[in-house]
Amino acid sequence: MGETEKTSHDLFHSFCVRPDVRFDTQEDGEVVILMLRAHPITQLPWIISGIILIVLLIFANVVFFGFLTPPQILIINLYSVIFIASYLWLNFLLYFFNVGIVTNMKVLDIDFHMVLYKETTEARLDRIEDVTAKMGGYFASIFNFGDVFIQTAGTEANIEFLKVPRPSEVVSIVNKLGES
Image (cartoon, rainbow, N blue to C red):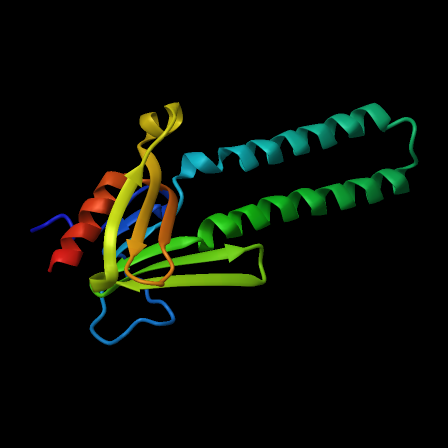
């Protein structure tokens, strides 16, 4: 059994082999081989920012408790919590819905820019010219994540999977699928 025949999922489903998923433009007989998201460690900056904002809100409540009336504190807290929750929710949605999909017929890059704009780029496997993995930096080396760039023939858009786990395995899988 080859590496692309077993079903497996990494932490937070950032590197899924043979996932049970479907997508809009999936054709009959098309099988999803690989689904990718950014490595979970790359999401720490917005998570830490959210925690800091919550701590600052608690600190502000303690400091300004005697200076403001209860209705003022309630309104300020309400707006602050809505802002923090929106920030965390939007960042989670961007993480969750920005995916790369490799099938037995094509490669897709689905990007959501904020909530209302979706960009889908796809290339058939026979149109792929070059697949490159780039890893740079201390954390990328430790946690084994990087960028995968897929160049296509002609005027088709190039595809990029950014900050994905195990980029060298992704390159290997795409190259093997392109040869068959």
